[in-house]
Image 1 (spheres, helix red, strand yellow):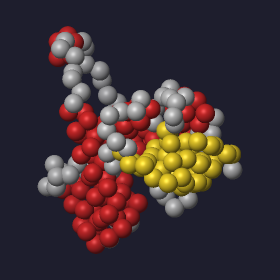
Image 2 (image 1 turned 90 degrees about the horizontal axis):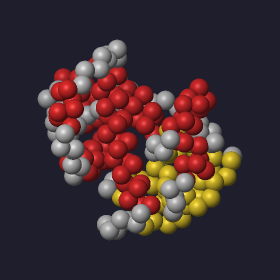
Image 3 (image 1 turned 60 degrees about the vertical axis):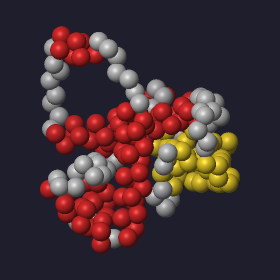
Image 4 (image 1 turned 90 degrees about the vertical axis):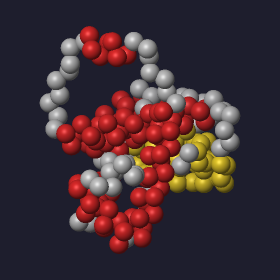
Length: 207
């Protein structure tokens, strides 16, 4: 097992719920031997806890159970691995979207303000990237559609760090959609909220 394989496994790891799950045993052991991966796992666990906390605050509609029981179940053709990855993407996407919307609307909780930074990297559709590790030119069309639809958009820098991209206005997705899967240079304020690394975009330059 290498670092990338371990990360792919651990993207679905829920600390501490999955500690006894055999499918994570090898990846966790590898992380314990690799300080860099161990640090990544700690950050990942922090993000999961932040997302979990946000979702607990969401109140389900009162008639949801009745609708689920009344409607005919939907048949899934995907295997369980795909379903788990999709579920992880939905949860992470929901958490990131909530965080970015709070930033746009100047939520009550303080944002950790950082200094202005300039980064270069590929514009990502974060939902597909998290679920399936999809990126690059072959995924450009899908990424563009997802970003245009309002799903979280990010940038993966040359050193592998991924940032959520936000803006002072909600139309930042419209500005970035045409750059999906392309390399751009972004200038903006580095911020953090609930464990998410973000850049509040001030300028976009096509590389």
